[in-house]
Length: 60
Image 1 (cartoon, rainbow, N blue to C red):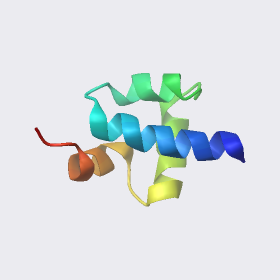
Image 2 (cartoon, rainbow, N blue to C red):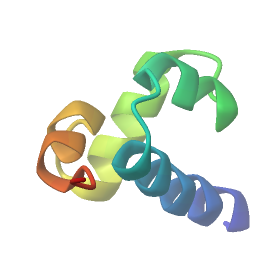
Image 3 (tube, rainbow, N blue to C red):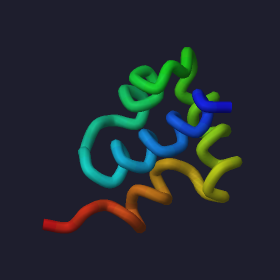
């Protein structure tokens, strides 16, 4: 669905380009529970948001 595509795209952008807490990112993306965001992200990427962020964070 379009919503899932937007969440997928925006989650990667926010994780890579900000130091915002994962709980806050999940709220911005419309997830009522951060665990639901983590589960969805793991389904998309095969790893947790924290793991993905540590590998893809933009370096200064």
